[in-house]
Length: 71
Image (cartoon, rainbow, N blue to C red; front, side):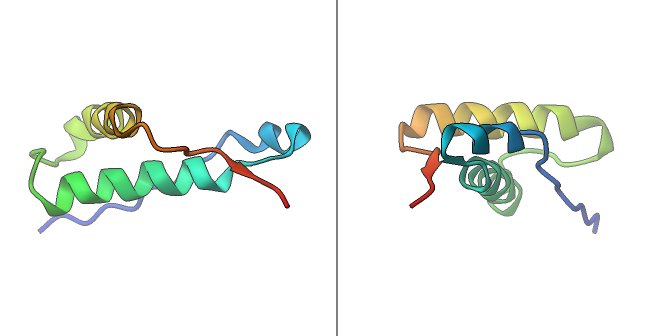
C-alpha cells in the first residue's frame, strides 16, 4: 500500500486581498484524498499530476465557494 502526503502551497498572496488562502488549499487536498479513498484514480507516483488535475476539476464542478474571507 502506497502512502502519499499532499502539500498545497503558493496561494498566500491572496491574503493581501482579504482572502484566506487555506480554504482553497484544504479543499483541493480534501478532494484529492476523496478521489484516492473512493479509488477513482489508480494512484502511483506517475499519476500524481493527474490526481491534482482531477481534484481541481472536481472543485470547479462542485461550484461551491472555495475562497474564504478573513473576518
